[in-house]
Length: 301
Image (cartoon, rainbow, N blue to C red; front, side):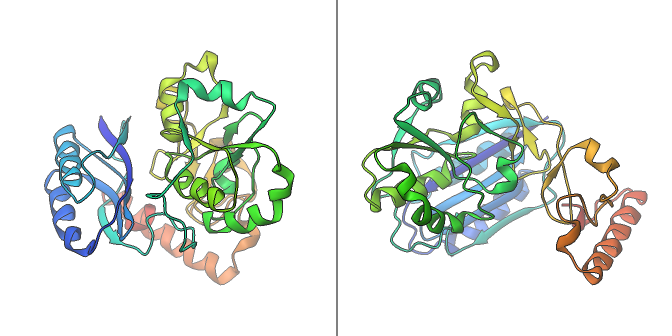
């Protein structure tokens, strides 16, 4: 069994490149795999590995400037959900493309999972899912607004076009682990929205803490690792990944005529040229050849 740790923390790093090599070396030495993103605004990522290795990496992150009190969320995976360890330097740890957004200055009011149901049941509250369309497609909170965005950077434009719909409403926002809401709630505050709330710890914390019998969550929650989705209690869900479009599919979707392993699914059949599908087929051949040799091909993830 592997420990999966999802984490983020907004703080000011003067030169995040100075931490890159050390974090990657420490993770690899402890058998930890996954991705960590470093930027001037902080750190974000998901890693998996044995207990001791995860604890060592978390301790190293807490030793970084401004990170002593950072929080993380844990779950378990029956198999290692990542192929390799990467520590990458980025312009933003979650891309919104709004230079004036600063979660260290102000964010919406945190709502604990145990209090979330009461908040979103109120008539004066609108609930907005800040995740991408393919994530929302497999699960969301009952009655939540889906902005139908393909990427988080589209959210500000969506808000500008739809803000009038929510005049006079309190706004409650949620995302997978909380990081996107740190930025989206700060953005709404900057747009003059008086009362903004967001789910503390995101969907993952809600699914971990709120009993299924009391839950207002419907479906599964997409996660960015080989588990693809999780449900109540953070149990691994039924979804797999289409490696052509990186969207979740159910086992039954593989029986559809549009599905070709590693090449297309019913969601992306018309999105790729024949030349690109040819490249996907060649990649899939290499994946299968590696599997027959008892190896894991990099194109499998």
